[in-house]
Length: 369
Ligand SMILES: [Zn+2]
Image 1: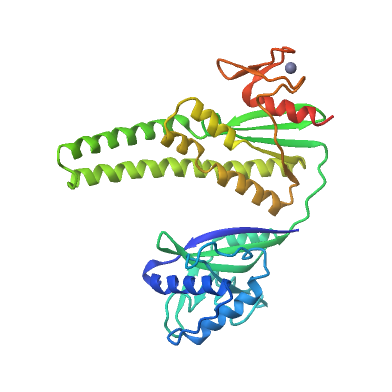
Image 2: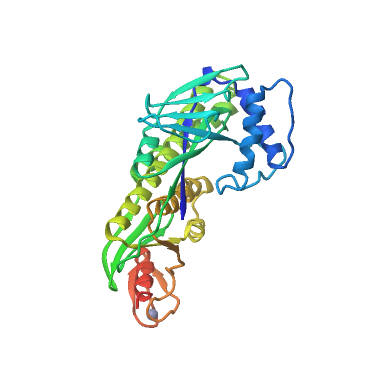
């Protein structure tokens, strides 16, 4: 089974012509639709790369999806040449991306500016070295813009064979950040460890209230006729900075947790079971009457967490499956559970009682037998 991981690296803005990259992206979009547009002012080399690469990339898994809209910005697939420490090489010698492990640099030929023999050199990211050490190979790359900033996406490929689980199961229950991500390690029908993981909720709360206060202040200043003033701009900037900080906190937590859980599964040779309850969690938060923007923050980067968990599991050969585990249904008699204060669930039929986030673990246990 082939596994892939992708990493974005920012490109130096002063060395990149953003309009040129945007043009390449537009041509890529057309190429996906089978149109080969010959533009006389583009260098032959890059035209050859663009359309020559396509024939390889169209069948590959990574670039197999067609852009949804006409003229949407589409990342430009590029061939990669790898030059190793012993001077051996892999890939097309004329490739526009060169990973030179001898000097630990990446060279980009002709993709950052429409100028003959234009080369941009970047330091080799540690990420590349780590993936290669794990037996991966960087066969593909893409260049493109995100929020009008130029980036290089490196795609690592690895042949990974999932191990056979040896009786352990690692169950991961994805809730909103309010109640956290719950995980439990199960062996032979017994729950060995169970934990709920959350970002620093106190810090997130503080930041959130600071943004609300600032938004109110901006509103007040606007009604007083100060809409365009420097003070308003300053407060708006502070609000934006705090919101971005909250997103960064949940994103970092998502990446940290995905990595921690996959390592744990590897250590125990466990089968990874992912219960993605994000939709149910969203409904629960709505029922609690939380404001929509709070819900958005509490749900932020959870998709990314699930995606990263799956990506890492594939990369390291951890067998995994998605499974629906209930939290409102009794794991003993399947009767509807009643929720008590403190998110305690009880069964009015058989008397089963457990914290809400632990109920899915009981469901995972019943499935063992
Ligand atoms: Zn029951």
